[in-house]
Length: 414
Image 1 (cartoon, rainbow, N blue to C red):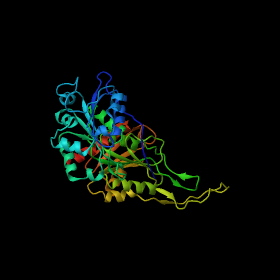
Image 2 (cartoon, helix red, strand yellow):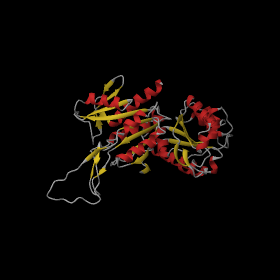
Image 3 (spheres, rainbow, N blue to C red):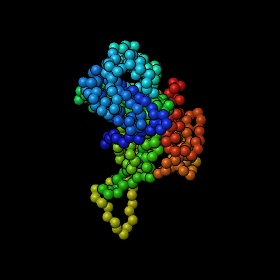
Image 4 (cartoon, helix red, strand yellow):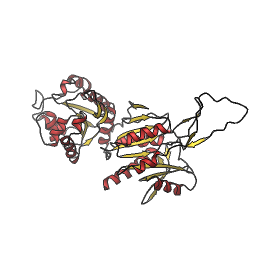
């Protein structure tokens, strides 16, 4: 099982007519080095960026680095220096279209949540009326500490948007929750904020399965299906763009992972079973788009099966339908399945919804033109326990948004 992180940036560009402005506020943590890449990513999206730093941040990255890249003066002191406006923090607070805090340390978040202002960045955060995107970064024990969680809740109530943190290697050498989101994901979230799109899935952890599975016949041959993974990858892409922390459990595919999505690569049904259970254990929702094989060979030949004049008999046995077990154990988490059908599609989909205890099932009727494997469009019907909604032909990214809209509505009503 291979874990990878995409480095490709597919950031939306700001309007060519009105150049967007971002104030990048850098907190004092080891993740400050990532703020340099956030700056570069915003610049590539044609955003005008100015930088403010806490004094602690300058111990990790020199202001000169940001000045050289931004071609603008970097501000670190609360009291104005020669050439500064008389009330610098007010001027900086009102200048941008959005404020991005990266990394957002426990200290900075605590000050903002409790109305404390003893340096330039904390004063800016209290003075601004612009949207604020914060990328928390700290050790796991700090992030999970009750006062820090209360501060995060307070700031959410004030309209702050959060990206991350993620699970990964930390400054202490340990691995856990608290790692700052990757720069590409921060930039994408900032561009979404600037565009006025909703970030309604912030603080949600969503697992998406995608692609096909493969089961060996011998060391050379295997059985599989035609799934390309396009639907699952599109959903993962849209969930990440809307602020969710996304784990993509991917079977074999030729697609590149979406930016900022944690990818678990698997091949067989049993590998997908283990990886999905592991990821779903700490998640809020599972969207099961993967085309998991229903059968596998009863035995795998140790050597290549030689061609002979006789036919080959291949005995198959059913694979584990692990979605049944996950549906039974989901508790208050959301589990969404997909049903690809050709005969009596809606009745079969509704039967699966009940049998697997799903919250919703997405019916993929292969009889519809523009639906199915290998294409960028789909025609689906969303079926939950109360109603069904047939969607017209649309892109798989748009289908993903409709599924995520349904999830956001359910969470909002709880």
